[in-house]
Amino acid sequence: QVQLVESGGGLVQAGDSLRLSCAVSGGTVISYHMAWFRQAPGKEREFVAASSRTTTYADSVKDRFTIIRDNDKNTVYLLMNSLKPEDTAVYYCAALLGGNVYSTTDYRYWGQGTQVTVSS
View 1 (tube, rainbow, N blue to C red):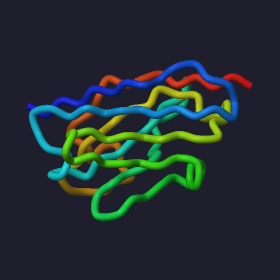
View 2 (view 1 turned 90 degrees about the vertical axis):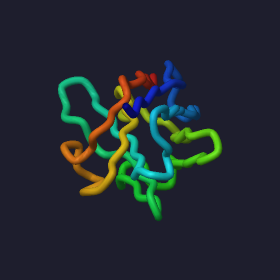
View 3 (view 1 turned 120 degrees about the vertical axis):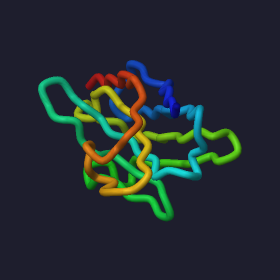
């Protein structure tokens, strides 16, 4: 059974940086499309970034966030720079074998989420 465990969230100020980690067990990151999603209070879960053969980002985080896959450590990271209050959300790591990388319904495995709060 594949398990994803996120860590690294916290409370920061606008303009700060954070690094989220997603440790994968029961499978290897190289076998999956790996992605980060986020969900703010009262909103639907939304795509943030994905890594497979290439990387892709939501327009709202492009040029600020970077997704990195470390195959040796079986871990995926989300480096977040220039954080804004609107980035406040629970961030989820997800793994996909095949399908639409932008669609939450296609992902089979999810982590429990880590809270990121950005104060103004």
